[in-house]
Image 1 (cartoon, one colour):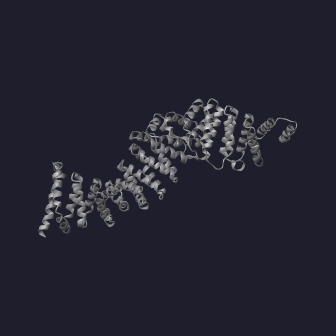
Image 2 (image 1 turned 30 degrees about the horizontal axis):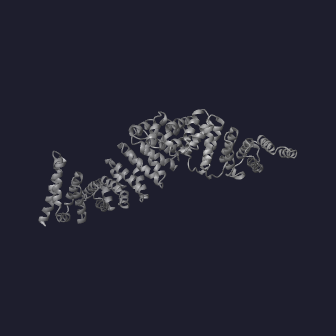
Length: 606
């Protein structure tokens, strides 16, 4: 009927532009989105686009055409009734009539609805489109309707694009957003769009650190404003997460807000079982970890319930590997400075072990879990007992065996087992996992750092008699000598290796002594020669050599080394002052001279 009226008016000589305007106005008014039928949607879209292209200078036609398009896009997804290229027509209308608030509002609403209705993301959005909408936001800061529609259109453009591309750095996006929110602090819709924009632009902008002091209070306010909207909370938390990664100054600016940590912890408590919970929990864990700059802050976060919430997230999302990975990383950071009494009252040991057991084939979970167990075990002897009680040593051992090719896994695992084995009553239990440390050393003997850690762990584990036998059966001695040869300049490796050899060289129960070769002796004396001023190395070497003299065959090899007596005397001379008045030192001196006597007395008898 509308077309019949228009046709009649045209035959009567009416102005074509006026007829087109009347048609669009009537269609806009009588066809809200709820009554548009699918078979008419493409037809209505064509009418709007043809009219806008025919009368580009008419602000009324552009405004009504954009409104009609908005109705169409709301009614149906764009894949069936339109194409992403429609945005060009809408942006052109916006660009041609920037000074007309009616066109601007209608065009922004059409762009927003179009992007929101796309079933497939556009490849990218060029910088010019972003600039045009930013110009609108900048120009209409006092017009709430326009600023809401333009910020919504900009956010929709960002989220509908696979690649946001280059940010128009000549415009201060963050200044526009901040000032808009400050002018309209009670607009929920504006906050919704601007928080989304902050999340979109913060991750790719190089200037966001400049605005952290002004952005943080706005984001914290949004946490309260949208306390029942998990989608908006997710955007705000992830925007804060990006800011927390901005560097030291950004973190300090965030910590100036006394309620900041409480707000993050509160989000973890409120959003534990909503559709976006996993993303919110992950973001909050990362934020707490980024803010924990020192032990004071770690203890403060723990006292406020930070570790409790992270443990809660681990338990609730134990099957979500992303949450588990993030939470374990945060725990490893926080518990190093947390109050021991608070930690003792939690099930933190059991939770970490359970998380590792739930994801046995996820390398990141195993690495971060082993790291968390190491940090926890170093805080108090009670945690060592609990970790072993819940099967932590076995879980770490299995992870090291499963991921033997991962140097990081071997490193974290070896340190964790080493820390657990320090507890005297746990050495036998933890020692059952010694083979994985030997295998890790064999697989990564070319890594100096890992050699330090594995040899150190073997030194600690080799005290137990059963573990000593297990290490001997798995070629630990050969690997220790290899590490000493490869890293003769590394005093830490030399000292740990000699201490391990002193444990492994004698089996008291079987009344047996390790038989050495001339190459083995050369390795030991080379360490003494390379580190003449390192007291621990000289002492450990003398003990090892003295143990070897309990075997006649070893004495034959020892007495063939013409330089050995000189090295022993040199050690005594260098550390004579250190030994004065110390029973241990006096024993070392007597051992040194006794060693020389043994070697050459045996040689004389032979």
